[in-house]
Image (tube, rainbow, N blue to C red; front, top):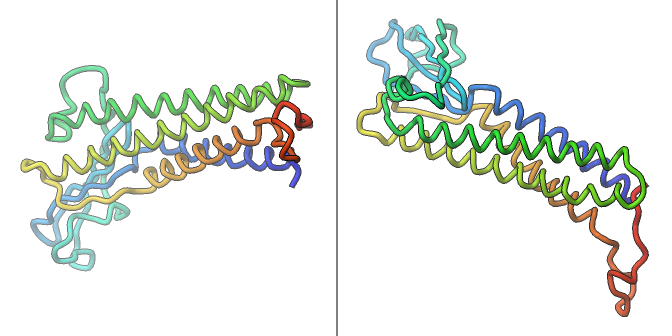
Length: 230
């Protein structure tokens, strides 16, 4: 396969990865939390949250939906929903919202790291635009920082995922928690997909931008003919 075609495929995969990561950052279905159901044919309060806000949903649990030993939900059932934005950089209410004091620190970290991921994606995109519109050696040169920026964006996405995972784990394991069940939802899956696509394709783009390997054992990389991207 021609090098130009490989780069086009890599750019398409990067676009998919950026779309997945952006979707994960702006949505609030990273994790779903369910409390114990006290009685059938009554309402219970489940929650889902992301990097920026927490949503609590009042769900009516009928005998048809109730499963012994399981928590409130599923979250897809109809009910009244109330969402509250995390006030990341102001003190006060976050501990009350989550009933757990350290939750704010985890969400600040995950949100800040996700912003770094978006920043690296923007820088990588600018390098790709410069590579597509440039000419000569500068066109090939910009692919290297683009690959590095996208790989860094993938690493930041992974760190944000791990911080969020530890956040949920620590909250569930708290003695004061009301939540008995949890699972990671589609926003978390989008972030995982974004991490894999951005990191692996960023590395692939970096490899594709490297000088052509020597065809003969007595050649060096400097002696080999340059492989220009047209």
